[in-house]
Amino acid sequence: MGRSRTIRMKIIGLLLVPLVSMVVLWGVITAVTASESLELKRYQTLWTNLRHPAYKLGNELQRERLASVQFLRGDASADRPALAEQRSRGDRAKEEFRKLSGRSRDTSETIRKQVDAVYTQLDRLEAVRGEIDAGLSDRLRTVESYSAIIDSLFDLHRRVGFSGDLPIYEQSRIVIDLGYAKELLTREQALGLAPTTTAERRLFTRLAGNRRFLIDHALGQLDPGLRDVQVSIITSSDYQRMRLMEDQIIAGGTPDGWLKTTESLAKSFQDAQMRASMILQEQAKPVADAVLIRAYVLAGTCLVLVLVSIAFTLRMGNRLSRELANLREAALEVAQERLPEVVAKLRKGEEVEVPELSVKSTTVEIDDVGQAFSTVQQTAVEAAVGQAQLRDGVGHVFRNLARRSQALLHRQRIQLEGMQHRATDPDDLDDLFRLDHLATRMRRHAEGLIILSGATPGRGWSKPVPMLDVARGAAAEVEDYQRVMVEPMPAQRLAGPVVGDVIHLVAELIENATVYSPPHTSVIVRGEVAARGFAFHVEDRGLGMSDDQLAEYNARLASPPEFDLADSERLGLFVVSRLAARHDIRVMLRDSPYGGTTAIVLIPAEHVTAAPDEPEEPTGAPVRPIRVVQGE
Image (tube, rainbow, N blue to C red; front, side, top):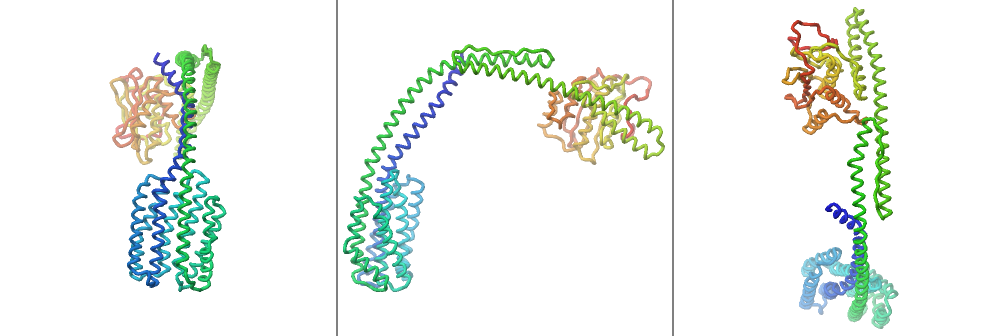
């Protein structure tokens, strides 16, 4: 009952995924639509807290710039008290800007960065004033210093003027450009007071050209309601008179009435700009409300659809959960009971019948899933049969190759033995011994193929063999046999039927010890009587293994894994585990006191016999190239 409830919950959860996606999509659409409205409403807030105080601050800085230039020019009308009073008005506008802009710190990162940039420029204001008072700044430098501060304010206008409503944004951008044209006019106003240097006249010319371009470019893009005010200004007599004065100043003259004319035009442009900004602010309100109402309607409609879909999903989920629970029980029965029986029969070579999965369902899709499960089972069984046939074929190939190699190696060793008896030259005899050693190693590798195939090697002894001869025979089958030292051992003997397998097992361990230890070190082989049989110790002085590696290898030795053709680097380990399991021999690896690894081979007592009362000739494999410690 609990499992069925879990399945039902999972099915409902899966069916709710598209519903969740729908809810998320609904939330995104609603959020985007609402954000458009909030963006338009935020436009009004930013006008109050940023743009309007920025305009006021810019106007005061423009007047302070003009007063500073007049002071440096030495006009009697621009005495120090008047300049100090204008600076006070500028400081008040600056503090008001800082206060109101601090309320908008939760705006976007871009606006916050631009506000910080304005703060940085305003911090320079005292230094600019100090240079003027100390006489370290001329008129051109003063104009440029104040202009840099005012430019940061107009950069803020452009950042804040962005709106989600494209028409409002376009008109706002144009109004800001016209405001900047007014800023250029005030720069001309300061420089036009009898410019005396070529640099001043050149800057005046550039400012006049830029202002004219901005005004001409902006008028063609303004809406009629905003454009009419601007057109009335540029078509006025004051503006035309100012254009003529500009041309005179550029030509090197000094026209009368320049300051009065530009003051009047600057005020007209300022009033027109503020009026246009207020109009745009009022236009944003109804647009924002309409967008917000549309967001509410869309959100309500989507919410109704989501609730209907949830009800339908819950009903559908309950039915599917019951049918899928039945399908699950049937699949578990096949996986846990029927298929293991099929695999066990395949390993024994018996014929098998593929279990079928039958599920009663009113849903065509679940019936299709049941058929798909049956097809998967059929494919799995066929793959297992093919794998078993492949293993048998590979084992057969291994046996055939090994048997042929064994026959050839046997004939080769007979010929080598005859040549050894006939040889008289010590060098030739030594070469024949080396060839005999190579043949012995080749025989061990051939036996390894037979073991991998699952068969038993044909090599065996009819009588018990001393343990010392067994150790020597194993050492003789190793490539680097010169490094192997076989210590004296007790006189116990090993039963003949297991001698060949034990020699092969110990030889694999010795070869592994020589491979994974430095060439200048020795590999020690010793034996001792144990309470439950006889133990061989194969000790190397290499780098050893980690605890995880020792645990992994000991687990493989204790429980031989099924042979994997892809795991060719561990064939020796597989052969050792197979031989040990065949005769109930225990093989274990552990750390050596010298830093290397010690392999312990415990042979059960049933394979060990006591030494005879009368000495006999050793019957083990002949071992010529072996080192033996003193006392042997």
